[in-house]
Image 1: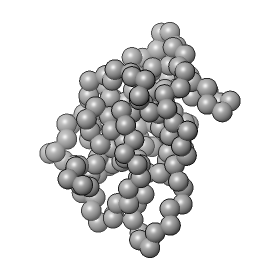
Image 2 (image 1 turned 60 degrees about the vertical axis):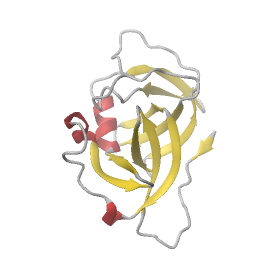
Image 3 (image 1 turned 90 degrees about the vertical axis):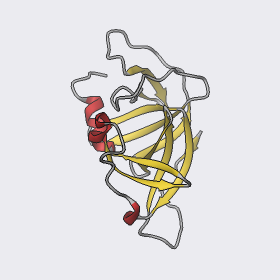
Image 4 (image 1 turned 120 degrees about the horizontal axis):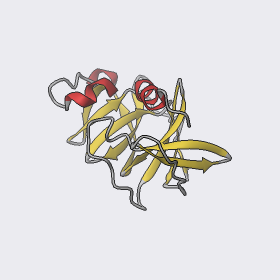
Length: 159
């Protein structure tokens, strides 16, 4: 179980600190202030009669959270859950949810001036949930709008 560092000491204080996760071949950046924790796939309890993107619920430190596959929301093929998957617990204005990821690529420092518009480079279905993009180590990182994503995930869904 790994906590995401909330305070990384670095002389570049203006840089954004993001957790970089991989989902279905895409790299996504998540503001570390919106990510509570990263941990291996927990024991999942399925919830009958829920949306397809809701994998189930899990208990983490005495709290029950929904576990979601955000791939369909982003217009990607649904993820096949594997034992090596990781969970990142996200905090949004509407609550906390766990999302399943293929891999965690660590925390990156992203200079704010390097974030540009993703228009024309990503599928239209992602546009609502991606606030920008940057390149790092020859790969594009799509910056997730966690507030919008968590609101969409929680909209009208009783957990």
